[in-house]
Amino acid sequence: MSEAQSISGDQSIARELTAFQNNILVILAKEPMYGLAIKRELEEYYGTEVNHGRLYPNLDELVDLGLVEKSELDKRTNQYSLTDDGYDAVLDGIQWTLSKVVTGDDRAEEISEIVENSY
Image 1 (cartoon, rainbow, N blue to C red):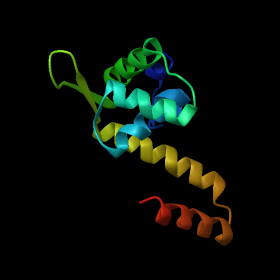
Image 2: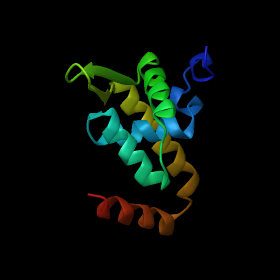
Image 3: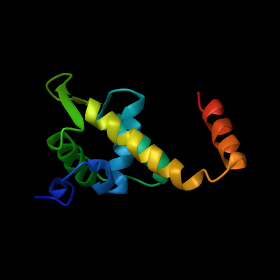
């Protein structure tokens, strides 16, 4: 049993995931993707190569935790998408981060500007 699987209570499972796993969830919040597209997004974020041996076991764990759904695009390609629980985990992480970062009106305004410029 992984660390993430041992969580109990009302606390979000996202709080027990690795940063790498949370980054996968954030990427999938945009749209469903196949593994190599996720790999490219992660490589762009980290600025370095992401090993298949790191990516796919983490995707499998997120599937096992019910945060990501895996479906077959064709015989060689799987597509991954967030479940409702996965989306809730992403929102929980954002909410927690904002609760620590936004400490006044000035910071709230900065965050609003970031959100407005993000789409």
